[in-house]
Image (tube, rainbow, N blue to C red):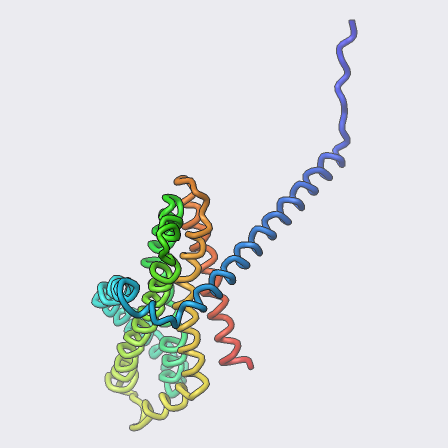
Length: 282
């Protein structure tokens, strides 16, 4: 009795099927990714329609706004201020010493203001709030969705977007704006102290005022605060949207948080790159 013959599949056929499967998986991933961003834009539009409602700034909704500002900004203010001060001192000292080594100390102050105050501190503030508060919002909303709390609000006639979600967006955005302002207020005196006052090769009198006036022109200020406002919306809207999109199974809560943080990081970097392009390229 002859043994059964083994069917031989050409090697090229196997590679073809692998390529096809990879292409189909890539297309599904792209469609899923685009669908998530489409849902995020839809949710942003819903939030925008309720953002300036009077009901948002009264009663229980306003209490949520106050609590969000307290936990996101006020509670962490001492530690955040210390972190900003230490980081600013280190970066300013490095920039000053490097500029002096290359006989470019006259440009050190302007470089510090552009690098630290306009770019680094707003970005780090957004990332700081995203890691501390954005992940918590994502988890909280995902658990509310999994435990049907969102539907429970709707069943008793309460709009969960207006009374639970929009106040979190407002509170988180105000916190990002406030912490960025605090960081700038800390960094400016330290820049004057380390670049002008404590250096034996200090700059001429009035150089600090001239540099501040040159760097903080109307365009730079507008881009700075619009960028910070966009950071604030990103670190609140994206986590909440991903929490709402979580499947109603407890095991999917960590997945929703992970996806929300990845998309949040991508959005923050995209905002930063766009701001840099407007300020220095256009």
